[in-house]
Length: 304
Image 1 (cartoon, helix red, strand yellow):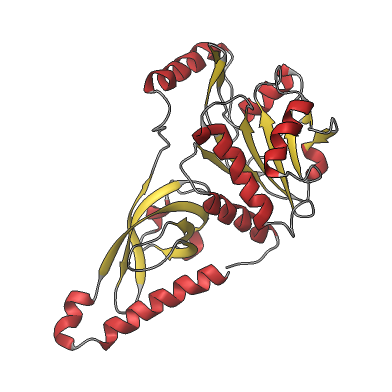
Image 2: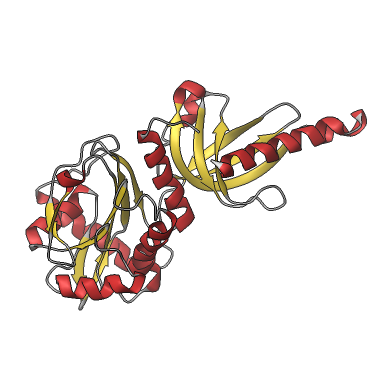
């Protein structure tokens, strides 16, 4: 909330400064445009607005979460929580608004393009029995896996709490993939220390259950001093793990001892519905934290 108020204050100051300029220079200062990139946190079509966690705008404002208005409702089409966006922020003497919004589709800049294409091809070949990925607003079917303490964890047992879920395998050699995804949850664990376990639960699912036993996951979890009561590293029978991966659009294929895989991080609300499914790794831990905070606040009935 403080970050939102700070952002609104900066916008108000910018407008006030424009009004204070002499008339002969107000015309040139009346409308300033700033390119912005960020992650959508929520969309309010009734107010023609969306809230986004944005990266810093050089010379104008630091990285923060704040609401933005659009002039045409249709400009909100395609915006969902978790979407990466680029847009132009227009600030004039009396108002601010957003235009030229573009949803940025995830494209891995680190993974070998040939491997990425092969993953898509193998996915299509394996799609003899089509898999339907959950969409925003759908209730996530129940599943039960085993955590690093060999305890059963069922999604249905977490109803009433916000659940963040991501997917890794412990042998992943690239720091920009599984390690970064897991580290994002390490940041969440610190940021939401007061809510962890009570209002928020973290689930990290391995898609390599053959090798990632509870003991291996426990060792992996120790890197972040993960609280096993609130951050569960999950494994289980191959079929059960594959089912959970498929629900969120995670594709995995073995490749010479390693794995080609996609990346997904999802947020499930207190009623068990998916509110966001972020693909890839090109977002910051702070943006994921802002997305999580929006889900926590939203289900408490508060508004920013």
